[in-house]
Length: 621
Image (tube, rainbow, N blue to C red):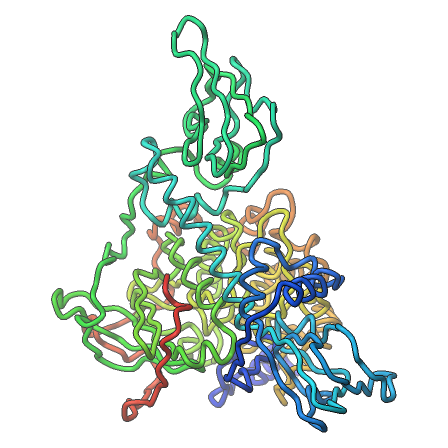
């Protein structure tokens, strides 16, 4: 067999993918609440105390519950009555609520138990308030009984609202500080995320005169005394709730002119260190910088002035449409509409808020811009920039050979690396890279979109969620090990392979997730690399797909620079890429801003029926 014949044979293995279906992201299975009727009851002090104790005595729950919102949670706990013979749980069925015995007699069978009777305060389903869990036992009422119930949705809403309230409180304080009050809202909220709550004991000296200022404090409770130099004749000054000290951290190193001492009985503060500020912002000018990105500053559009042009795609919760601003007809956007009833039913509230928060913070040309969000009784809306070249998955399938040549794959991968570099420098891990989530702009450059699985994971944070797309999931996710930016660099290796081959390395013909996960755990060294992949590309992919995240390219001392310096990218001009001076490998040809030729043909159906949701959970969306 000649070298040419071998090339043809290996290329043919990956050529015919016209029937390929888009890859869908996976999350822990979610089950909507089965019973929407809550029997709200007033609880005695004794009952509230019993509920509090059983929650905090649980080894798992005590690490995830906070006393600051326990009263709210206990208010939301309701009663579920059981008649004799009723089942509370059945073995191997999924459930999404936490139960606490209230009265009566429950019989527990399964998981090594045979007819065990429960007649005292006991908790069932601790993990289920985080995600749906499969019951390992059957619980049946032997007489008329009742249990206290805390639903996962209620638990998550309380946690989300607490975070939002904390952010709003800090931003309100920040808007009273002259040196930063004019910063854009999105940057103030980003700055608010960096503050930590801290208590200081009576007589604690927060700073001495002459010391360099390293902390910025906002007082939330208590007071402190500020002692000035005698020659200033300012005497003593008091700091109370809402007062601040240390705003000089936003400028160059400055010695303090004052000594600050905590008064009795102590001081509660929001605290920001200078080191943390400089980790996220270059300087005060970076914080104050207005949004002047190249996409256009279309941040104040009314929902009713958007005219629907065409449906670009459909997903599990809704659809994406091309819309036109009826007041400024040169402006086109992509409007993503998500059905609220399904968001609530599938416990996706925190995911939607997180998606908005993270994508709204991003200001990079290599990330799809989120301009604004809206809501009405039926939908939540994301108004994003329209990338009229469609997604990279579609462009890949339009190629005659169903894969990209080396230079094309290199260009698109470099754009993704730029997006990752931006996100990781802000502790954001994307967690769902795949060609379906990479959009092609009219100028031929690409940007990542869909932040539904993204998460901010700081240096000392840990994430364990099972999240991502099966063929792209890294070993640590499958093994429930802590996740960090290594999951993105693993996915980058899979992404490069798919661009060069036309399918991902761990895909199987049955699309069986279990087989996929087993192959991933077996490792990239057992994957067949076709002749079309050069030795340099193979080397890069294997270095990105090491079993341990700490060994992967991008996770080591020099970070993303190690990837940029790899021999496969030897001819890549990163400076010109960032300034968009490189000629894209594929030219996007459009007949105007509303030309949708690069999108799948999606027929506009008759108006869909979406249920109304008048809950207050979306108040800050």
